[in-house]
Length: 295
Length: 235
Image (cartoon, rainbow over all chains, first blue to last red; front, side, top):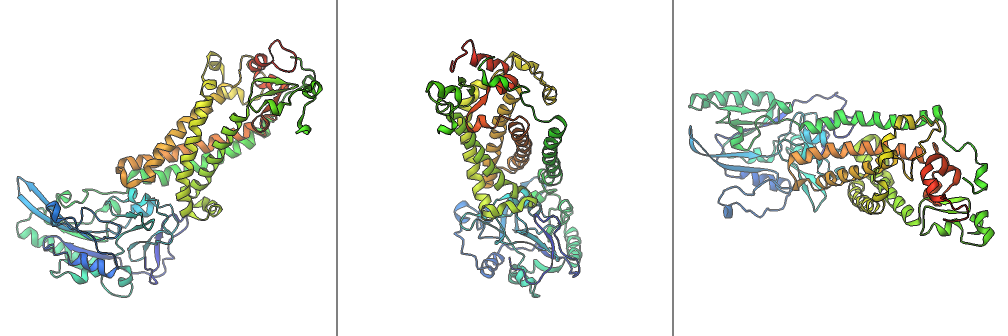
C-alpha cells in the first residue's frame, strides 16, 4: 500500500464507503501481449527490486521448467507462467504469460474482505492492500477468481501486486512495464490500451492465428490487465479462467445472508420482548405449597 | 454459606442444598430440588463463556456494523486470531457437555406431543408427562451440538484457507454464516426463556436448585420422580 493522494473509489467492509467521486481519473491498465513475450523475466526482477521484496529461492529448473516458482507468493507478485500445451490443431505450444493481480473492476477480494479499508480500489482502478488494516484472515483468497492474494505467515498480512501505485500516482509507469525489453508490456489509459489490443489481435488474425483475442473478462467488470492471447479461445491454456466471476457464495454471503442475518437477529430480540409483553412470565400460580414439602 | 441455608435442611442440621448440589442432582433438600449439580453448571458456563467469546470476536468480522466489538479485544486483528482459538475452546467444551448430558437428552415417546407454539402460549396446561427436560430443551441441545460441529468444521477451513479448495472454502463461508445466525437466534431464545420468561429457572444454573412449585409447573414427571413417595428432606 502506498496511497499517494489517490482518491478511493471502493473500500472493503465499508457500508457507506467509497470515494467522493469529485476527482476523476482515467482507469489505468497493463497491456500484456503474450505473443511477443520472450520469457526473459526482466519484469519479475524489476518487481522484486522496486518493491524491495526479498530474493526468491527459485525452484523452476529442478522441476523441468523455466518458471521461477510454482505459484506467486507473498514476496513474489509477478510471475511468468510457462506452460507446454499439446493440441491436435496446433501441436506442441510453449506458452508464457506474465501473471499478477488482475486489478478487477469488481474485485472479489475486496468484496470478501471483512476488514474495513484493508482492500481499496483507487479511482484509477488500481486494487491495493493496506497492511495496517489487513487482519490476515485470508478471505480475499476465497474471493479472488484468479488465485492471486497470498497470505504471509511471517507478517500475518496479505500481499499482492499493487500495480506500482506509488509510481503510477506520480506519473511513472509500473516497474515491470519499465523493464520489458520487447515492448510486449505497455501501460496507460485502459480505453487506449483496449484499442491497441484490438489492433494487435487483427495483426495476429492476419498472421494466421484466427482465434486470437484479448482477455478482459466482463464477469468481473473487466480487468486492469489486458492480455492478448494467440489462442484466445483457450485462455485456460495460459492458466486463465475462461469466464471468471466473483464466487457466487461470496456474493450470496454478503448480499443475501447478511440482510437475512440482521433481520433474523432483530426478530429474535424483538420477538422475545414482544412475547414477554404478550404472554408474560410463566411462573407458579400458587407458591404456598413450597413451604409444606407436599405434592 | 449459612445465609443460604434453607429452613427444611437446617432444622435437622443436615447439609444445605448448596452443599448437596456440589455432587448430586435430582434430589430434594428441604423445599428445594437440586436440578443441576456443580459439574453440570460448570460445564454450562464454560460453554457459555467460550461461546460469547467466539461470538463477540466473530461478529466484528462478520459485519462492520459490529466493528465496535473488536475494541473489547484490542482490534480486528486480535479478533481474527482469538476467534479461532475461542472457537476451538468452545468446541472442546461442547464435546464435554455432549458426553455428560447426551443421555438425559434422548427423545422419548412423550416428546412427540410437544408443540412449541402451544408451549409458547404459556397456558399453564403443561403435559404432566414432561420429565427433567422437555422436547424443546432436548431439541436445543441437539441443535447446539449439530451447529457446533458445523461451526468447527467450517471454521477449520476458514482458518487455513490455503490448505483447502476454493469450493470447500466458499461452502464453509456459507455454512459458518448460517450456523452463526441460527446460534444467535437460538441463544436469544435460550436466555429469554431461562431468565425473564420463566422466573426461577436462572438459579438452577447458578445455585443449582429450583423450587418445588417451579418443578411441578415446568417438569411435572421429573417432580414426581424426584419427590417420589418420600415426603421428607431427600429421596
